[in-house]
Amino acid sequence: MLEREARRLTGDSDEAEDLAQEVRLIVHGRGDTIRDATKTAAWCLTVLRNVWRGRLRRRWYSERLGLDDLPEPVTDPWEAVEARLVVEQAVGELPPTVARAVREFYLAGATVATIAAGEARPEGTIKRWLHEGREALRMSLADLAPDAPVARVYASNWMDDARRNVTQALREAGYRSEWGELGEEDPLPADAALLVLGEQAGSRSGLELLLAVRGTPGIASTPVVLFGTGRQSAVLAAWKAGADCYLTDPSSPEVVQFLRKLRTMA
Figure: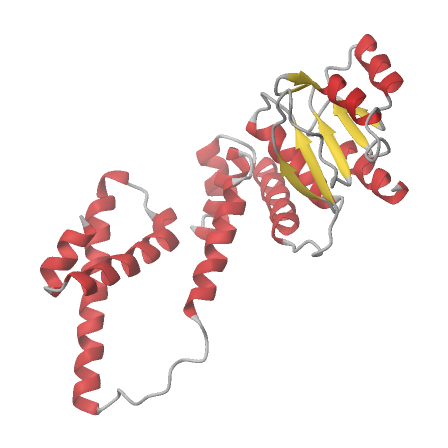
């Protein structure tokens, strides 16, 4: 739709594509302000026409006043666009309720009272969500050291929240997490500083992989964290097999504590 209207306005396919792309970036940055989804198309077309009029004005000034020789701007606008995309991705990885609160408060300018009314929750809950969101974003956007140790994670059938929580915990503990799958014949990773295993990891159980690690020269001493249900028999089997840590809840604050302790012991 945008490209069709852009071609009608510009009469040039290359400029139309460039114009439509500029509008997409604007829509991406301001889309959270739209309250009525049925009006999105009309709003996008309005933005397109406004951008086109702005281009025509700049061309008129350039031709009339001779502004073609002005120096290029010092700042690079793409840096701001890339930063926005990174933040959007980080917000998208938050729990849905927290992400909604962060978007409405920081991007749409809504008050805590307004968000609380919309979510049918107390204002204290909204403030807690905002605090959790800020902390999660701070850790997610902080740069890890280039030589940060790699934690390989193998866990099947985990919900998105569990994956997100473990990834965040590893980051807070200073690990760069890499998720993967291991088939029956796949070799065990030799470059991992830490292995994190779910109760089931692809075609093999986490306990099987743990036993395989402990029996493989060169990686037998790699620290292993095993997540499971907490059944007494499973816990005992994990300790006997050589697990460095057995955890049951990926969302528990204790996960970060144990991961940090393992790293200091490495």
